[in-house]
Length: 314
Image 1 (cartoon, rainbow, N blue to C red):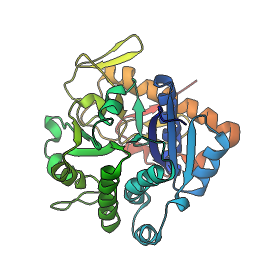
Image 2: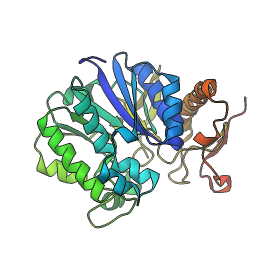
Image 3: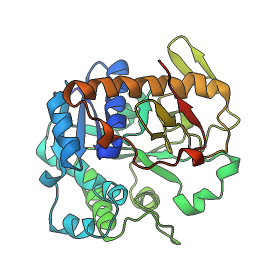
Image 4: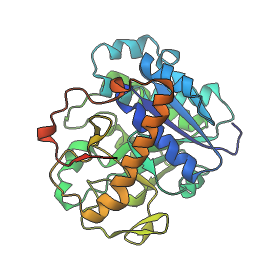
């Protein structure tokens, strides 16, 4: 790790270990100078990732971050809700323990990097915070009121006094309340971001969907491959968010649990199937250390209710 690295971080529970390794693989493909930080939420995830000894990676077990306030919150939240709750605390921990880290981009484990995000890191050289928009397509416009304007799956911070002040504020709000529930002014860790935008001046808002594309915003977009690149409306895609993607078994997947919007064939071929192949690569990596990977798969998933079930046959 050095001052010139592009720094990324994510949070991994058992259910997201395979996805976090696939995210790491995507960063390796598109960024030659990076450091990756993983906060592991449970012992099986931590033990496995430590054994893998991934290059350019620091693994931090949740116990290193937890304090009495987080532990109190942990008692009344689901694993998913707790992962959202500790996000700000995790980023603060990195900044305080590793002073050479100038900026960092947090990325949800179910996101995949498809091209080098240099423009995002450039914005963090002159701004305290980087926010990414949901960019909901027409079908999902009603979700702005429920989920908020910004998606916390891709968010960046610069390591300075003002950014730490913002992180401390966000951390306190999330410890107070961070649930998978919609209220008039809160949802998970996301609606708080709208207050950050209004309260602090040096916030860069990445309005383009290429930095956080997902099924909720790509409907009616032109998606095509150009060599090794993927383009959306003629722009180079950076991050794709594989929300509602479930790994059912070692060769079965529900790649988008909803029937609508329909996954177009070119989207399946250009975006989803390459991601499945990367997940399979991560499975092979895990099996070097642990032949039983069942604990990192979905338990009791009802295949009959899968919106887009696929089975890979060698």
